[in-house]
Image 1 (tube, protein in one colour):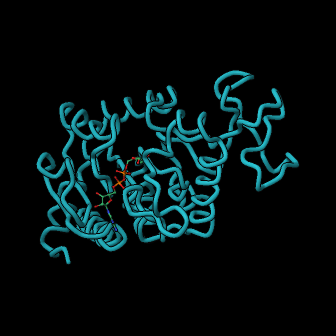
Image 2: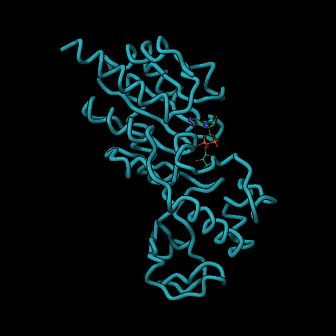
Amino acid sequence: MVSQSKIDQAARLLHPAKHPSALTGAGVSKESGIPTFRDALDGLWARFNPQELATPFAFLQNPKLVWDFYEYRRQLMRPAKPNPGHRALAELERIFGGLPIITQNIDALHEDAGSAQVIALHGKIAVNKCFYNCQGDPTPVDVSKIAYDQNDGPPPCPHCGRKMVRPAVVWFGEMLPPAALAAARAVLHTTDVMLVIGTSGIVQPAASMPLLAQDSGAALIEVNPYESELTDRVDLWLDGPSGEVLPRLVAAVKKLRGNAG
Ligand code: APR
């Protein structure tokens, strides 16, 4: 359990921030029951390496396998609800009058928790698009409006007819959506305190974002029960689960704000 003195120290760093922000990864959704990307897959998918399925090459080679994998992940994510960590971030946004969240997560749980400034770097799993972006980048496809055989791989694109509809998420080897990247860069230039939550700090370009913010003068507070690639670089590491640590941080900030009148 993270000591109260460390939580208070983090609150003192955060409290004076004019432009607080957060970078989140799979860890923040762990307590909502969504396995992190690097957790072993279970059941039918145990023999697959998710990093080998989440690529355009894998989809081209075997569209049905990759589509089925994402259907499985959608089933895992569909019942998930925001946890106290997501809700604490939404509350910090209200307290500070803004708190952009740059997230690598595709589950949309920050939005569900009420955060208004979410930059979804890797897209959203609930959205689909044509693999070929036949009507321009992106070409969204509403699969609920398509009649197709669920056991026969991806549905056909309603525009070009090719059975290559795919989730609108960023796969390994793909570019990030330019608008999301630009929005994230703007945050990195202005933020004065960044919370780095539940990310292993391995996957670029998200992994280097806290360091860019730091170069621009931001203080970094990490929330992660385990050491990450970023831990050595942060100003303060709160080594506990975000669902427990973030609500305590909110309480400590509120106390300071109360005292400050
Ligand atoms: N609270 C906070 N952090 C946690 C918790 C928790 N309860 N449980 C685990 N973590 C931490 C782990 O210690 C790890 O550092 O969350 C991190 C999850 O790491 P990854 O699975 O690598 O997730 P992430 O950093 O988001 O991965 C980045 O890579 O696989 C791609 O596109 C995928 O968005 C993903 C990206």
